[in-house]
Amino acid sequence: MYVNAWLKQPNTRWPGKYPSGGPLPQVIDVWRAAAPSIDFIAPDIYIDEYTWTCEEFMRGGNPLFIPETRGGEEGAARAFYTFGEYSAGCFAPFGIDNPRYEKEDPLDLTYGALRKLEPLILEHQGKGTMKGILIDEKTPVCRFELGDYIIEAKLDSRKLKTSGGILIQTGPQEFICTGRALDVFFTPKDNSWRVALDIVDEGTFTNGRWVPERRLNGDETHASTFDGAGLRLPEERISIQKVSLYKYK
Image (tube, rainbow, N blue to C red):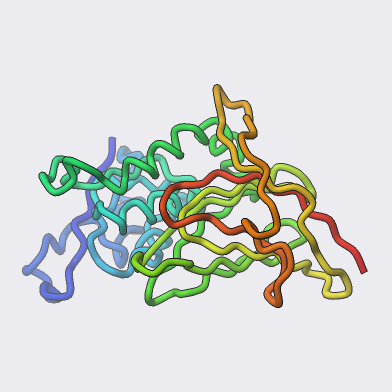
């Protein structure tokens, strides 16, 4: 059994203007202690402080489950981030039957890729080998560590204001990356080494098995730049890429 949390919005700051008795971040610990029959507390997220809200609702061992949130381009980007970063149990955007999405819904591309990656995502949940990427106007660069590398992701788009992705480490020097309109750079933690791309394949997963479809050349990647070696995920579609790296001095 779970209970929804209706968060206070910028225009409903005072108690009584929103369901202030609900399991909000400031009282989530009280709810967890006083209502042990509730399995988890699930936030409806419509506020801009998305990552803060996710982290607040994971306190005390509460699993992240989002039964209602924004859709569109913003939702498509956040879905990747939510499953990759927080191993979420649910991400359900509201209003997917909106008439403006009859011809094309940005969520279609994201959920199509997530379905292909599902076995790999489930395999790597909780192992520290998977990270989510989320880029928007407030956070133009997403920077984190994975394995022996520092990863820096940037938005590469003229029309998108936000984008997301997932990076999964499948070997000491091997990664699977999926997303859209992203530049993803790898830098060794040990700065006495340099890094280069060995092989970059674009492909898909069929029944959990990696199927390479196209080998990318230096012009289709960031084979050698001042930012380090990295991947280039196109803007017009979701790309799944497998990269193997090598280090040298």
